[in-house]
Image 1 (cartoon, rainbow, N blue to C red):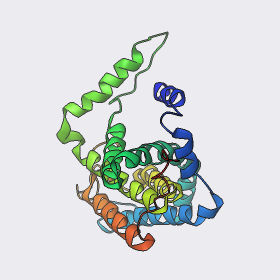
Image 2: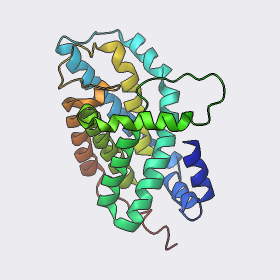
Image 3: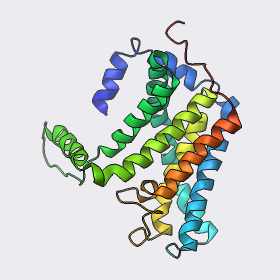
Image 4: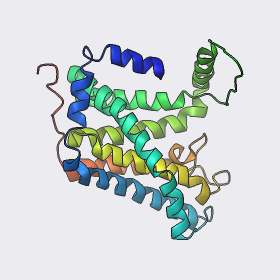
Length: 249
């Protein structure tokens, strides 16, 4: 990640990074309703999935206050994560691809990169004492080794890809990152809160899949993502084209 950041900074002008970020993050106060809408939608979907878990007998009906307190504990981190990831995957990657190849390839391509990037994680923690200059490369190799077992990561990959589609649609429909940041932050809060509400080890696969984020690796979440993507386009209308003329400008 540090190497990627250095490369982006060194090639910022050639990649139109400042212009893309400036356009995507422009007028934050004017888009506060979009942020609130995204947060409301994502938390509403999480609440529905929680309700399904409780109704199925695999969840625990917690009092509202402890659940709210637990969610608020992750709120700031969720927003920070959402801002950083939306800046890269949507404001830079999706908008940049869209300039050269159009909206549909950009949406699908950025969602694929988003999904694979989240799959590439080490299967175990590595603790080091001393200086090991090759430790990072070893960690990358261990992370990539998960792709050698595609059927094990396929449910999570599908869920992350569909989430990337939703976030990409939110960005293209508004021309700004604030709706996607709200959606992203809400989903992070939901993923962090999910383990205290449900026992995913005993849940049916349609509601909780395998992997480190069982919530997103199940058909219930996939269906919710598809519904959100369709609903956003109907609510917000056609995509905004504010980032299409960056290089010609």
